[in-house]
Amino acid sequence: LIDHTLSKYYVRFLPLERRISITEKALQNDTTIGRYLPIPLQTNTSSLRYCPLCIKADREKYGEAYIHITHSIPYMTVCPIHASKLFDVEFIAHKINNTAFVPLEHCITNMDIINIAEDNINVCLARYIAEVFGAPLNLEDEVIIGNFLSNKLEDKYISPRGEQRYISHIWNDLQVFYSGLENLYTTQNRLATVYKCNSYNPYDILIISLFQKIKPCDLSSFNGTSEPKHIVLDNKVRSLYESGLSMNRIALMLGINHEVVRQILLGTYDEPKHACSSYKCTKWDWDSIDQRCCEEFPRRILEITTITKATVAEAFNLKDKSLRNLPRLNAMVQNYKVANRN
Image 1: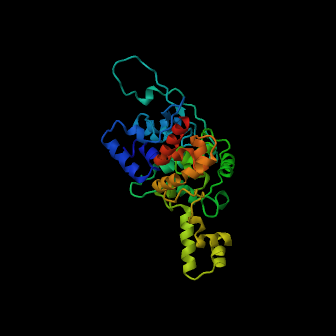
Image 2 (image 1 turned 60 degrees about the vertical axis):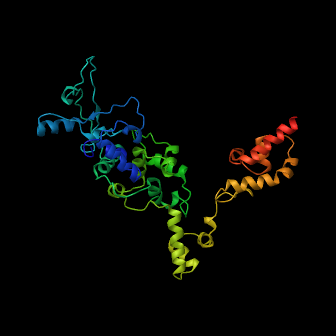
């Protein structure tokens, strides 16, 4: 399962619980396993490919050729061993009732050797993916791959505290880095979803990792931290300050602005990013919000000319959808509308 399928490719960057769960489901021949894997839809792409030089080597060593699992990794176009172009396996469909295994030897149609320069970006990416794919699968350590990659970004691509990533800047430089790549299906939006921890597409992650110059051994072993950078920085600043260092000294040591250090120590960044309305609390205590809105309803309603959810929400400085969490206020609005209609 682990060494002779693509499970390591699809499972490697998932959260630990999913990595373990999917592996267990596969061992139990669970037919629903596909829905748990981050497998993107591919069109007009063969799943099986071969390298003519590998064909020759297999025939000399084993007497016949066989499919190499690394050649079947999605979007792999170059043999990572020989730096030669891969060719799709062409099957001839027969209308037969029984399913049979077809030897690769019967499907080889092209033995042309197309060598590609060693420094070609397609070769570099193929070898990077193959090296990561061949590394042992980590089923012990937790990792949040988006945070892991963010923590390894160069300073020019991320804010000092790590809360903001300059995606457009990353995307522009990444396109230059991968100039000449045959399969650059990654987009700026897909980059953003990876960094925001909302995507586990292995191809996107590997594209980003090579661009960030992360060593394959470090990526496969999760050598680093996936704790959000701003939390790591805040804790470090507080620890250094408690040890007796001045704010100026801390700023110079960490290479950040003095004002950032000051705001961290004041706890400014611990406050909610968006100011809550007077009827909301940081814990979203809807019951208390509902009660306070009802108490002010007689006064607030006089300020509204047309009674709708939108105008009521505006009067109470709430979003329209918040009214669904305020059943008593909602009831008062409905009763008021009925009474005025009569």
